[in-house]
Image 1 (tube, rainbow, N blue to C red):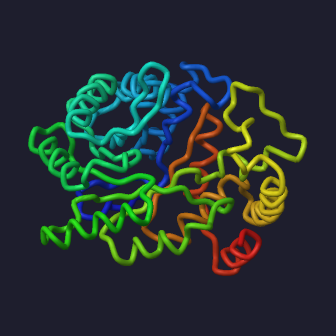
Image 2 (image 1 turned 135 degrees about the horizontal axis):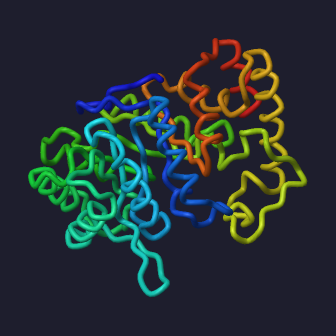
Length: 318
């Protein structure tokens, strides 16, 4: 397993990070808690030391399941990342970044994760109204209390990043956010220039979600793929599995299969490796529902893509 040091931290993070959304048991088809726990243990045993979740994944179930499982390991050997900012009340989902909610959210997450501290606490989504300065002030208070060690950003739009930069300039502060988490994969490269700009201008480490395009890049699916209503990918908003986007993705998959054959590995490993080799100091979040899936993603740590393979993949996915 490869590791990177998150910028401006003492956290050495595995470049394959366990993604906690499927752990919530909602929206990804059938999952079994015992199999998920087994997969987490196997991930740790194979070098994965970081797991990323959120308080709304399974309405807290993901954090609970993760907390129960990592209790089998030394806490200092595991890096826990979770998120706040999405609330679900009375069947309605909305964003909330207020100080009051952050305080409530972190206490609830600590309890569900069965831990005294969170290594990386991230804004899941901005609510569009709470000033970034208010959020930073609250997060710094949580650090002083020992509730969190570092904090990061997720799903941040260009104008929201500009708000942060304006705040830092006005206050003459150093950027307190150590990571930014965004969707990126061979199936989703349209934000690439934006990500490169952040890497060049901001002292933050990139964590990619959707690293396998919600699974389309694994090579398991074709034009006849059908998901039932228990799987969010049945909805057309998950464009990777519908229409012309699906056809394009399957073209990418054929190239992945050919490269994988040459490297004696799998399309999954090649797809993840593309991210790791293209963004040198990044880490890729990978969701999993069982042990085989997380082991398949870990295979990416055992290969390298040369410039020729990178260029081939860039061409087919442009």
